[in-house]
Image: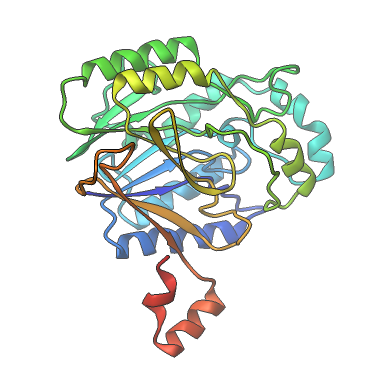
Length: 314
């Protein structure tokens, strides 16, 4: 089975319409490259607007992907707290976060994509995270890494933390699938490395700079231990707007955070083939390929030169 990993869509019908067309191109490209299942690791919407969640639903419907066997999803910080487009938004953002009902926002998010949680295993009957989903050769585990707002510990709602309750439930889920021969992939929004450079890809450079200093995932050591003991081989995430393939603690990580918004401005995504066997090293039971898509002008030129396939694949 081939799994397409895409992250940080930041859809906004009001401010970022280019992201909408870019996402459609990425999905179309992934399907043409044999993707059987899609994983979206958070920040679906840029401003936590219901209209943008509805927009994503319609895109999934258009490509026949609005079903649990075709698509899996986790929530991002922008899906709960939104973001900022102007200097005024930056000033008012802490107050907006303070007034945000965290539990209701998570509930709203999952209600828009309830079809994607069908046939999942969840320790808590009323909670959607964490969850497990069995595919043909793989078990996917979805976790909510978005921390609640705090004026001191999470002043711009970008930091992450997996709650103690979620960790306990994730441990139970992993124990439940301990004897499976299927490979285990974990889906989460936040990255697991230190962010040294701020991105410069959104409409607000000031906002990017602020977020670059407030994008930490707290409690990583405990998560590493849970992953190791539970047999997690691969972690898919986003949050930091980069494309990155790296290892930590013997586990392979893929960051698809620049799928739509990246420094190169070239839409990209990962294709993970869970049927390929390698040398048994960290994450090597999967074949991973990075795919990139040129812009409209570049694509037109390439087609004219009849070299489309050679240049597009990367």
